[in-house]
Amino acid sequence: MNNPPIRGEEFITISRSEMQKIGLVLSGGGGKGPYEIGVWRAMEQLGLAKDIVAVSGTSVGALNAALFAQGDLAKAEEAWLNMSPSDVLSIDLKHILILLAKRGFKPSPMAIATITAIAMHGVFSRKGLLRIIRDYLDVDKVKQRGMPYYACATQLPFFKAEYFSMQEYQQKNIEDILLASSAIPGVFPIQEVEGSDYWDGFIKDNTPIKPVVEEGCNIIIAVMLSRSDLLPVEQYPNCKIIPIYPQEDPGAALNFNNSADKMQKGYDDAMRVLVPVFDLVETNYQYSIEQLKYKKQQQVLEQKNEESKRVDLALEKSKLDLLEELNKW
Image (cartoon, rainbow, N blue to C red):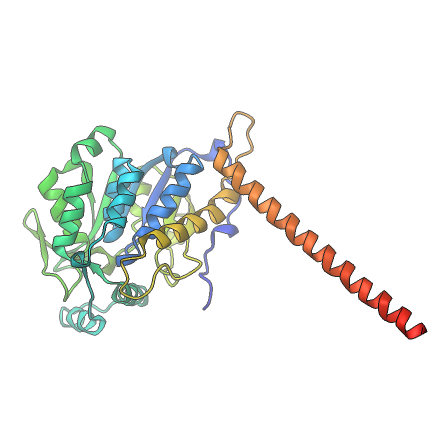
């Protein structure tokens, strides 16, 4: 499989003085959502989560954005680890594409790739999503923290991306917006929010960078759930966009049950990308213990590899010396 054209390691190191505002963007991707929670854990351990000033998301990314704005990582992990089979639905890719065509909308290759990924991994049922929201999202706590967070949905009939500023809404509207952001055509009914109709945000913007840029963020961490997704970096020339792509497919088809494994993959990929990118060198910046530990682990691994090579070379030399002695006999 070809690697994505934009990779985290291609970005230059970002110094502490440049870190004016960091935004977090969480893509949609159905049952692959736990991957984003794993990225969050890595950010916490690297001391970066506290520097996030705004977050946005589409579909399952919108749900995770709300959980991030709440600031309770343990609760977010619990939400994903306590999934039940009744929370999940499989979907029909062909039916979705036919329905979109009947509406006069031709999906972009990126949208088709997103639909395909969602079809492979399943989605929340409406009842399942509402259960997660009501059991694990404390709207009052989110409002008290005050972090701007956004959800993207596609407004009908004009197929226009709308970015809801969630801090402006109360519980009922927040539920409706999160349902709208994940209302996949042909799977769920059109969702109404304040008198307007909406479908899933992935149709127009599966990685909603725009709202966090409008919040003044100049550094964007974008968590992708599909290796085929591209980022519109050319639209944001004044921002440094740091994508985190899954190095492995985060989860088997229609499997919501291995959330812990998906979280671990998100954690590993985030550490691989973020540690070198945020290699902050100012003397007044204290590296987090986890960052130093991760660097040390990498150094130890490299040392072991070098030692293994030296042992292999020594063994090879011993074999050659022995053969030379045998030949003398």
